[in-house]
Length: 242
Image (cartoon, rainbow, N blue to C red; front, top):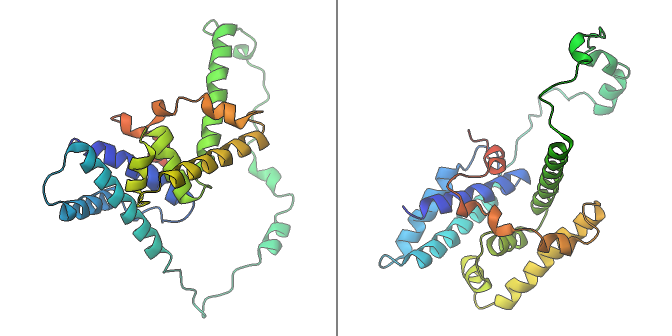
């Protein structure tokens, strides 16, 4: 039970990425499905109750194995198309038929000038507050861009990056969790490749002139979903949770 919230947080985060890239459908498996399956598989493997750290690593190992199994299963099925169903309209023809119709899709506001439009708001924040808020918005946008890059990253690279940089685990523990036995050098090499991937995209998008400097300036441990009782909003939204 002490490890349940941490395990659910990692599962929620990984499900969010797998659904974002289309590896898993939005409604299956649920968070409860994968967490329960990971717990059951871990308990079957244990001969006795391990100490907390070993138990957590074992649970993570089985969690990722369960997720990979679900991804593999989801790729075996597809939607069937009835041969008797009518052929859908050609997208190009539909687009051409809608030319100039977009003008009717916009709401036209009332142009009448009101007194409230010309009187200064006494509650308006000062310039320093506005600048501080804008800085927070810009920084949040940069984080959103960086995390969005993770969904386009190879799955193993992403897991290594998140487990080491965000969750604070070492390479040896990650190699055990991700079933890369005795390959700490491999884990470190893939971590460097993951960081190079993010840095290159940050520079290309103009977010930072030096993506490596940007990465080093981030307090990744503060963003760990396993270090907070509440899951992050972005992962809940991606998993369609309340």
